[in-house]
Length: 136
Picture 1: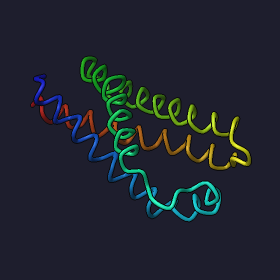
Picture 2: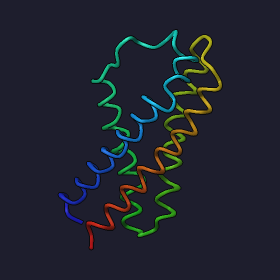
Picture 3: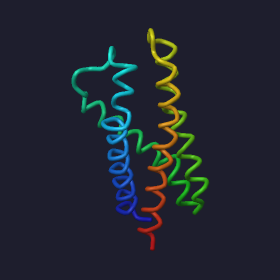
């Protein structure tokens, strides 16, 4: 697959990640985060940091899950790799917070880890489907 097509896969994954995660953060889980973490939340989102996170995280999904999946042509392997990547990354963040931040809620840790798994699996599926579509 050409670099241009691979770049299109990455951009598609990034768009999917942004849409899905912003719906989660802005609509579905907004009140939950406010209830459990309101005391820690900044009045304004640091969009620079958020964008850098999205770029890096989606690249990780692309590199560690989608590229190997394209090579092996194995959807199941791709999805499992994406899911594990998401769980591991979100666990790193949330378990570190649980260990170091006073009153960090276990509930948020568990929900975030599950969300990392779901979101990453969905975005990995988008990347695999785009790659398949672009290679036909």
